[in-house]
Length: 560
Ligand code: HC1
Ligand code: SF4
Image 1 (tube, protein in one colour):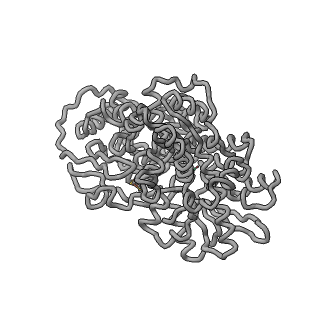
Image 2 (tube, protein in one colour):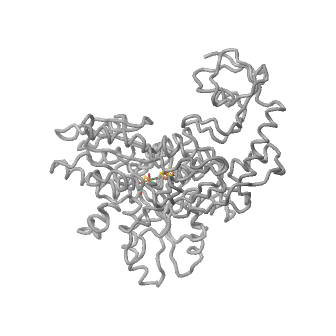
Image 3 (cartoon, protein in one colour):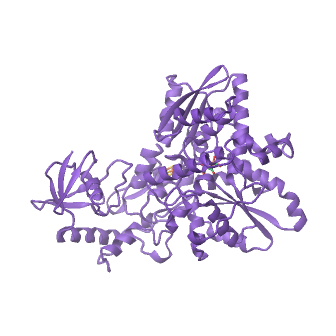
């Protein structure tokens, strides 16, 4: 706690972890490449340098604020220093900017422009690297890497996976999986968080926009969409809406303008999941296990278990994810329609998540040689398509999703944030369905931002022990406790990404506060939803009692 003097301005500080944070608090846009407030400090890019009274230059990310400290952020020497760093980075960088995936969203490009770097005096001496396109979710292009290490620290510190690291030395230094392996040959779970953190085009999300347009323009295809819960509260961000604003209706209109035949809501699939998962849980309570039962909707979590911890696979719910439940039902219900009009239904899911691309490609979800979800587009990809179409998103008149599968409850909406799946299932399994009970569940501790949350909930004559965990590094901790016998749970909700799907890597770039605002937007949608419990979704009820009777195992469940 104290007062600092930044460029002559008096700036109080209180608990900021470094001088950089105080500078930014003072309203100065200090440029950085390797500083990521949610991770450890690396201090490698040296863009955040400041000068003290004695003319000493140092990086502000690695300085502790001290009372009475006087610094300058913008002297002629500092500007020269920053320009030089940028020039050196550009020199060893593939400068194919106009066609780069990240063009317009690249921090190197932005800062080169901001600092007026117009020519590069140094030759590029780095070898040319091959792109790694082996992952179903992300593409690595080491030629565009600036060695900031953000991806290395995200993968290690947030996800506990440590797939990426620095390799080789000197001018051969690169970021790569161990032994220069391709991502597909590692335990990478396709969470995409490395791509979300990458400031340049060195790691990007696999772009399938061209495929989507081809299908939308094909008259023999009926393109049907589903939209995931977390997408609606983030898609508006790149059009100037605040994070958390529910833009589902505008997105439906935009998709219709782009050629969608029907637009449905993944919430419908989430309601089906709640019904099936609650039934499975109650069955396990009767049979005595296996406990804990882990939720199954996060594909990166499933991939982690398969690759690194398969003994827990039998604990995972047999429910398909809402996306895959939805797709199986849709393809089944549309068979007759396809036979009738000779068109083929092509199903696109809009997801906040890169791992959903990997899930859609899994063998378990292929039927008659075709995947149930033909294509997964991330929120960012759909934003690009809307921009390509010239649609003025914010001016659109909203339209509701189509019926019957456009109907979802409040319980389904909150799937998109950490704790939401557990809360939705809890609403289903408690016997007393009064408003008071719903509120008691809401305030039980299932909601919140702590990495691991534990809740005891009375159901019948039992007290259920439920845990919610997000961020894979914390999931690993929880598994270790379960294994050591120091923790016991009946039900555990797992989301690989911090904050759950609202913080998925397919969403527009955003730091923690934006992700919390998105979660708030989902809770708001639940508060204002007419129907709050999945068992009250009339279409789900009709389906389960009718066309799905006796077929739930085939259409809604899976064994990994
Ligand atoms: Fe999710 Fe899910 S909530 S996994 O986070 O269970 O992606 O939004 O669609 O399938 O419903 C993601 C979000 C999403 C599924 C649902
Ligand atoms: Fe690591 Fe996830 Fe990136 Fe794979 S996708 S390298 S697991 S951060």
